[in-house]
Structures are given as structure tokens and as C-alpha cells.
Image: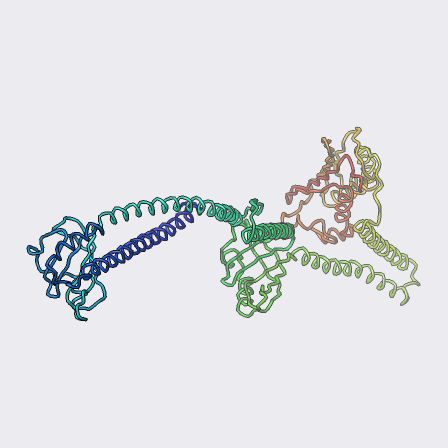
Length: 593
């Protein structure tokens, strides 16, 4: 594609060439006609002069020496003279014998005078006799106020044609020079106009391609300068707006990416336009793969799809708990609302999913905790009330019976006291009511000193206790908490290991932490029970737990004690074979603990 200035210059030159050609032809024709008119007047004047000279002797056309007179006059006027009567017969001629000449009645200039009765006749034509073009001018001859003939004066226009040719050459040169000058001026003007416009076009193309740094650098005046300034202002405004849009987009992307709630944007056709990372995690797929898919393809929940379709049809927001079974079972709080434009038209649906699985699980655990606490408290309180009523009814009179009942009341009250004490202690740990006192602790020494307190219980059941050797394995933590962890785990191992079994305690020192392994050859724990063993009041063997005097809070306390020291606890068990608890404690505690 040619540049703009070339097209403007070409169009300008084409227009100017047409204008100059038309002007040249007009001027040449005007000058030619003017030249012919001047010659016509000159010939007419010559004809009148000759006619007056011929008629001076009053003989007129009947003069015998008319031929000689005309020839004599022709030397003075340098033109061919011809006298013709009203019948068209040639009476006298300066260049030929009148007697030999044909009748001139049909000649145009003669007819204009004789038949049309004009004051003069004019004709320009090629003369076969002479071999070149001639101009003929004829005037009437009157005798006694009657038209008697015609005086004709003719002149060769060969010189006139040469003069006209020179005129054409002059005009052509002038027009060519004018064409060159106007071409140069037009090209300059075209560049002055087109170069800024072309730069503006380039800047506009860059803006279209999202290069908002492009600016019109050429300084122009007038309307082009105003247009260039307007484009620069527009580019600056676009850059600012796009920067704000990108910033808002980044903020929105960051918010959506880090939201714990799943967000889904669905258009009116049910196709997914946007999904954040949390939504992909809930649905078990990469959220980028959701684009342009129908919500039923990725949701895998008929209940959720029905809610979206209902909102699309009615335009009313809905909120309901929905259950997902893939990739794992979970409960979500689904909030579905229409996305409405300024004109009130619904352009899509926004779906926000809150995972309430843990909340519902905690609510269930809280409900179970209340039920368990009530159940645990009910048993000793019922016992206390029953035996107290029995004593009040007269059993106090029997000293032996009274002592037995009081012993039972004491044991139940002690059990009740331990239960309440464990509950309060667990609550204090959960709410960080007991601050962690960081000190240097020798793990091996803490384990061995704690094992001394349970040796008697192990010996009663004939259990073989394997303890680690004395060593210096130091960590940062709280000795009392470490000993309580060991005590609870060993007590559980003794309670759930049959007579003649074996309990082992091992310590493994690693680069950054220490692992404490407590194993037994007890009854073991079923795999389905393992995820819940650290819940409060959760018992694997409820009958044996109560008979052993346990409160069901031991492992829950252990879990919180380990967590309070930035550790972790794991359990591996095979039912009927045994159980191993693995406690991992860091060697260094963080300063914010």
C-alpha cells in the first residue's frame, strides 16, 4: 500500500493536470479566436477601402478597367482581391483571370452576403487552387441602394497557423513549468499533512495492539496538532485505565486464589467462565480445565447443578448445604446468586462454596462430647446418690455395710474428681491457659523416671517392660509435659496389653528432632478406629476403659501436649497384634511459643 503522501500528491497532480490542460486549451482557443477576429476586422476594413477606391469614378462594377484597378490596389493591401456580381460571376481578381474562374455564388462567404444579407461574410477553408488554407471576408457592393455584388478580400492563414503553433508550444511550456511547480508544492503540502497523519495511524495501531506507551512525537500546528494532542491524551488515559484494570485484576486474582471458599462464575448458558483454586480443590480438578465447560460436567453434584439451574431461571439467590462425594465426601454451604448488570439484566451466576465439613464434624464432636460428659458424670453421681440414700435409709446402723458403702462413695467421688480435673486440664491446654515453660530436657532421663511409676502396675500383669538405656539426648521443651505424655501412653499400654505381654520404649535421635516410640503387644486398634482415637471420651474398648478407671481423655490430653511443643504424634496398629505410638518432638522451639 502506497504511503498517504504519495496518494495525496498523485491525486493533487491529477487534478492539477486536468485543470491546466483545460485552462491551456481554453486559453489557446481564446487567443486563436481573438487572432482570427482581428484578422477578420482587418480584411473587412481592407475590403471597404478597396471598394471606396473602386467607386470613386462612379463607374462601379461597369468600369472597363476594373481588373486593372483591383490589381493596382492589391499591391498596396497585400491581399487577394476579388469582385463578384450578384449572380456569382467573377468580375475582377488579383491572382487569376476572371474569365477563367468558376462561378462563386455557392461560396459560403458569398452566400452569407447575397442570400443571408449579412453586413459581412467569413469563411476559412483550404484552397485547392493555392494549396493552403485561406481566410475569406466578403462585404456587399450597393449601387443605387441595390445589392449589386460582393467585394471579397482573402488572406493566407499559413502564417497565422504557424503563430498558433508557437502559441501552443509556449502555453505547453508554461503549463509544464506550472505543473512541476504545483507538483513540488503539492508534494510538500501532502507530506506536511500526511506525515503527522501516518504517525498518528502508527500510534493508533500500537494502541490497538495494547502498547499504551506509544505517543505522537511530531509537533504539528492547527487541527493536526489538536488531533495529535488528543491522541496523546487518549493514550495516556488508556494507559492509566489499563494500569488500574490490571491492578484490580491482580488484586481480584490474588483474592480469589487465596480464598478458602470456592468461587465459580457461570454464564447464562450454564458454561463456566471462572473458577478459583479452592473450587478446583473441592471438585478434585485443575480449575483452568473448567473454562467453557458446562457446570454439570465438573460439579458432579446433581443437587448443586439443580440450584444453579433454578437460579438461572428465576434470578433469585439460593443458599443451601450440599453434599459432595468426589474426590472425597464433604459438606459445603452453597451460596448461589445472580450477577446483574446495571440495566437489571442477569448476565451470569456466582457460586460460592464454603467447606463446612470440619465445622459439622466439630459440631458432632461437641455434641458427642456433651453426651459423653453427661454419661460419664451420670454414672458416679448415680452411684453416689444411690449409696447415700441407702445409708440414710438405715444402712448406717450396720458398721461393716456402712464402711463398704462409704468406700464405694469415696472411689466414685475420686473418679468424678479425676474426670473433672482432666476436663479442666484439657480445656486449659486447648486454650493455652497453661504457658509452655521451655527448658533443656534429657528425654532418656524423663522416660526412665516416668517408667519407675508404672513398673508396679506392669509387674502385677506380668508384663515385660523394655526401656532405653541412659543417654544424653537433649531437646527444648517442658519436662512435666513430656513425662505426662510418656505416663499416659505407658498407662494405656499396660491397660490394653494382656498378661505376659511386652511393652517397649525406644528413643531415636535425628538431626532436628527426637522420635519417641512406645509399643505394646496388646489388643490393637481397628483401622477404622484410628482416625478418632485422639477425640475426647472416645474409647476403643469402652467396657475395659471404664473398668480400669480411665476417663477417656488420656489420648486427647497427649495430643494437645504434643501439639503445644510443636511436635506430632502418629499411631500404627494391627488388631490383635499390638500398637505403636510415635511422638516426634523438635530439638529447638520457636521463639514465638
